Image (cartoon, rainbow, N blue to C red):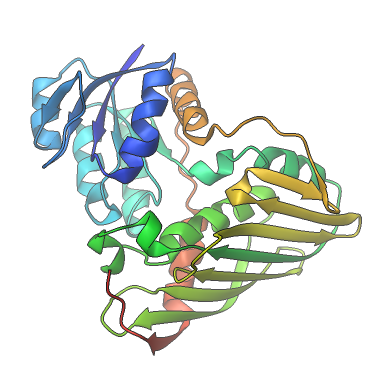
Length: 306
């Protein structure tokens, strides 16, 4: 068993990380670190530094804090010789992640930039089906209610928090997994609430390496049914990945899939990387977001109040 510490005990840590670690045959939760929360049955510390000092036998850490502070935490954990699991996005900037990858290589530890949506039940079957198909177009619709999924999380509206790209990057992580070649951004439009520093909605026009058009629409103002859909049109039919990658249909016919197990699969992958002394640090989804911030047209929209 790999003794692991969990840093940050917000919604994603409680909803996904704690249950996944508890069910894992590979990991044993050694401790948690949080300024204002703790988990039952394990040692709790106010910050990562205290946890690293008090738990020398701990072998790995999973970092679930906001991305703006994750680089410093990951650097400290790597310096202490720990394997590091990064919740998505892996950092606030590309240069931060590149620095961490180099530090992990030099320290001989595993760094895992996790993309949980890539482990949706339908993603790998969809990727396999697309292998010998010619793609003619892709449409992404990723729309949800920010008040439901990110209540009171001010960090997402601050620089580095990504705004609507916090969920939107999940769609981009699936997209970049499905396609064999790189994706290129051609244009983007970002809508910023007048009182916020990150977008509440965005659209992107992209192309596959073969030139097929990709449209993506992200919005945090969706009420009622939430939309997490990727539609791929090919020369052999239409593929739909719905429910964030956990439901698959081809030409309207639902395909049989295993049950949802995104975070258990992430931790199984992290354990495999540690055993093999490898890292997995793919920044292609974050690069597309960075491109949108660099070149996208910006406009102001109504103020947002949580």
